[in-house]
Image (tube, rainbow, N blue to C red; front, top):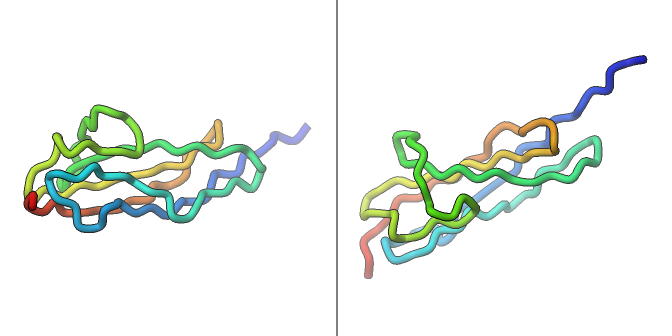
Length: 103
């Protein structure tokens, strides 16, 4: 018997909305191009929020949303997304924004 290889999911494309957030805005990490899996496995996404130095941030939600209570003016916020097919993770897709002053 030949071992069954598992195809790693493709890297999704992501963005953060709004594109020019303030300290009042809820951030959302949006998958703009879905990941696909050559084996036809369903794909889910893991979201990791971090600051400009790469330190993981607790968004209080552990999902695609980041609450404004955890942001400060001038802060760089990055969303990293990995696609998961039940066995393997894709390489990370990332998006970055810089928080502006509240209006």
